[in-house]
Length: 157
Image 1 (spheres, one colour):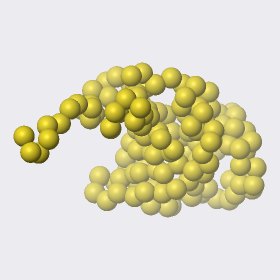
Image 2 (spheres, rainbow, N blue to C red):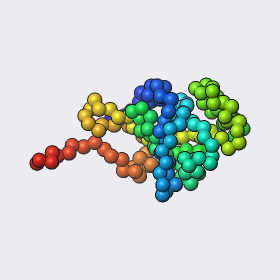
Image 3 (cartoon, helix red, strand yellow):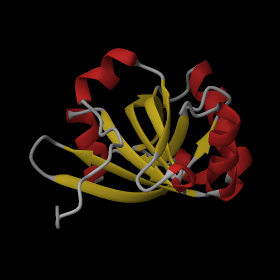
Image 4 (cartoon, rainbow, N blue to C red):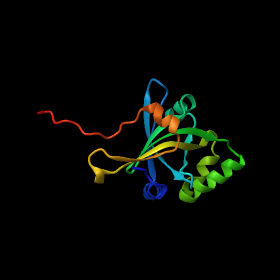
C-alpha cells in the first residue's frame, strides 16, 4: 500500500532521534542523532566530520534509518558551510534544536542532509510484516530487491 507524506510527517514530528546506519563497505556503524526535516522529507543532522558515521558517509553516502515505525533508505551529504543552502537548512534544524546552534560554530561540526530514496512504514493492520511504502527513486528501489510480504507455509506442512 502506498504511504502518504502526511503519515510520514506525523511520525517524524513525534520523534527527536533517528537511528542512522552507515558502512564503509566493510564495517557498519549505527548512531542515534537528533534530526530535523523539511517539507520534501529531507532529514538534517549535525555531527563532527571525524566521527565514524561521517567518515563512513564520506566513503559511501548510502544510509539506512529507523525512526518510530519508519524505515528509510537515503543518500547523505554535507551541506556546504556558509552557503545560502546551509543558512536555510540550519534555520530548520535550529528551530527544532535551538540548544545546539552554538555547536555548529566549532570547526568540523557539519550539517548533513539525507535525501530519502524509499520510505517504509511498518503497518501490522494488514497482517504480519506489512510495510506501506513511498518510493521516491524507482531505479534505486528496484536495485535493492526489497522484501515484499507474502504468505509462508507452516513448518508442519
